[in-house]
Image (cartoon, rainbow, N blue to C red; front, side, top):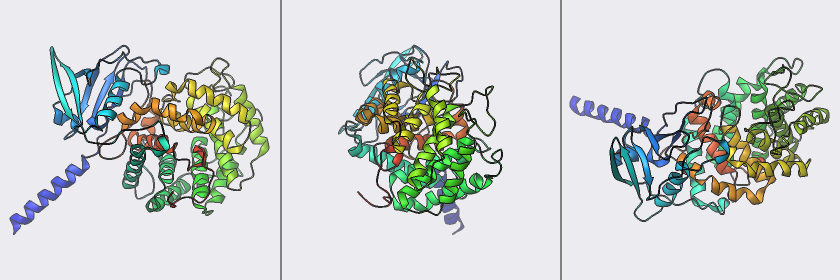
Length: 478
């Protein structure tokens, strides 16, 4: 009897250990100067590295009991030929997007996993030898992003991400950040938006737990009598966006007073010149950060749909600074009116497009900004030392301001979706070619699922920031 119990306990432990190891997390080393770029290899459950000019993907990590390990792929191997094709060289220039080995591998995984016999042939350089490895892939459908709103694989991926997020949410209601501090509030707002967009009534309790967490950890600290106190503007705007989309989706006005507090605090923190900063004070010798302004505008625009009266002076002053920040060379938004040039355009430009279209204001200007996003969509993984908000707001801006181009851009980014897709546990974090310290701060796993989930959700037309126009839709099948 004792032997049976011991054996049973060992089996339970082994099972728990295997479950704990079932979700692969890429082993990413952030390169702030951009000398290398680490990224996930999708269902292969491995990590690759590229340097400028590389045609071969260096394998830096192989997950235990995953597809790559099962095929015999080793750390130190280099992928020379993928599905019979030699990749074009990788470039660390942001405009080139996914071109090169990433595009070829992602597209090959997507196509070959849908074949009756899902095999991927890899020619691998191992030391001085060249070895052909036939890789047995997990079977799946192909992304059909010519019509992303009806693509079964895209919808299943969104469901998988949402189920994973609901599973890993902590008892407090937050999602695990990468560090301490207040990163969990910002991360939680985006994770909650994904659960809303997926439209699964069983996730409502998770959404509410997320709201209760941001309320307690952030919104309750607001004192409208003293705007110098309270949460940072990053948090406050994200909280407002989350609460507004929740009310619009469910019709539940329980948190309207909290939504109003967020929007009022943001309005109080706009200076007479329309400048905003991380908090009450203005950084960069008074130059400020347009990324704060545009997120505030989106919170105000969504809140207006919930019955919040926008402070017209704050909107007008802030919008004046936004218009002064347009880079004449790209037609996109720079860091501020003092620093209009920037390669990192997507987060600022996309959020402002979304805000203006939601509010029905300055539509022609919004469409002009959206055109810049489409032309320069290769830059969307780069935004303020992170990738998450560039992709989240970049795709929402294209959907709202250049809707006829949304399918084309989604198709361009198909390899990104495939290389982010895990066979178990949603999405892996796939960052940019330069500094991704901001996403490391937010938490690679949590924000990685949120950013891919929001890209997928941009095809659903449910959230108002993705073109939705119906209220009280959450939990209703369509």
